[in-house]
Length: 358
Image 1 (cartoon, helix red, strand yellow):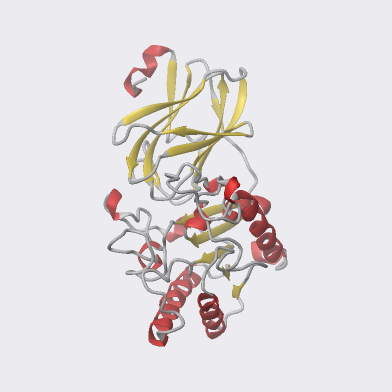
Image 2 (cartoon, one colour; image 1 turned 30 degrees about the vertical axis):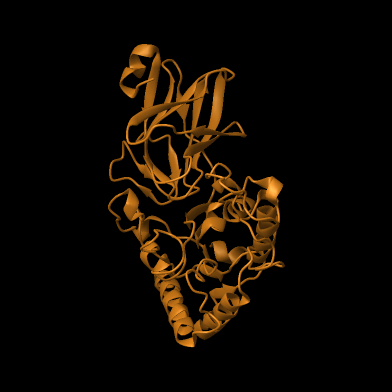
């Protein structure tokens, strides 16, 4: 089905600027009728009636299989995007019960793709309502593939390396520890996570071979040069109560210098602390939690983080380590492991009481 023909086929487009939509995440609204959905875990929520649902969008492909995640009345699914750089209408459901439905559309992957969202397509006599939620708590996460939920659905590989040639089919941000933690706490989440991301430019795996780190991406909206011009994020659009800083697991590539090159170790700590302190100046009341994860990595990075946080000496910037920190699994974090992490992190955040949310 082509977007231009839907009105002649008994359907209508609920355009993306309809006020019944609610959006979450760093989303580019330069064109309000075609906002660009960028980061893993960005969500769009609305209620719609009728038996049929389609999603209209334009996808910009970078790598892997690209798919849109959706949840209708609590039931999860994904729609594979087979065509890129053109307007498409994805067939989602045509056999729903004829009633009002809750809908969540979300971005499953990181910069494997971006997409412009045009809206949902429903039957001509159907209607929409706002998806009302009473969420006042706000979390922001800066992280890598673990925070993005990469390869999370490969549950047969718990505690093992990733399945070879997985092509992104197991990646699902909904099951990242960061998104589960936000749901545990009934909080909104800006999940600014990108696979392969390190702190410093020239390290990690993102944007090979001209590697870009958090020092480039943290203040960006569009942040992947391969997918077009990058632009700045307006920090006034979202002020979190809690900020999760989850870098330090890709930084050993291409060279694991943290225990050998003390000068570069100090530079790494300085770069990371500068980013955290810049964010701290923007979010004056937020609690910052500095972590790595249970993904196997050199303990030297955690030691450096301990030193960095101690040196900053700010009661609003704290360290947290998981029970199996750095030794849990050689592969990405699967759903049961993400649930394990989120339980521990949720309890840690709750230990600060209600004051952090005010």
